[in-house]
Length: 212
Image (cartoon, rainbow, N blue to C red):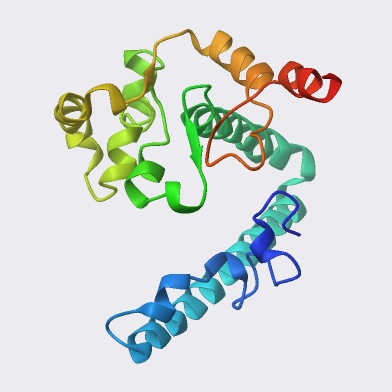
């Protein structure tokens, strides 16, 4: 429904289940130097990727329904739904804190480029054990944005090199995770309109602006 999506996609197909969804459109394909035939081939490939994804999604739903029929909804809730909630808890938590911080800038118009967008993330450690268990996706996320094909077992070494190369443009945060969540939730509620380089603002900043 594109509730929080970009305005350019309003009144367009926005569902992940639709092969012509605006979510999968790539504007640069229309300017593809390899020609429109190459762009059309990539669009055709994406159509099949969406179809395969849909089959997998509804197949999984069917498997869950079959499991409920075979073993009962209570067993499926205990062995599937509860672990599902746990996985989503840490997945959403990690993703939220990777991209939500007062230091992360938002660029508009001419101020935006690929490198600035890629650097709009924060490396954050969850302690050595959790970092190992999640293959360092949180404490080497800047490298993941810059070089997504780097395998996780080289990401720590790559991060040390990238940190030196970027200097002050490398973002990391070392506050405790509970405090980081609290701070992000309260201090990162919106970004101002009409600003080329914007940073997160709090609800208090919003109230101050409209009260003045």
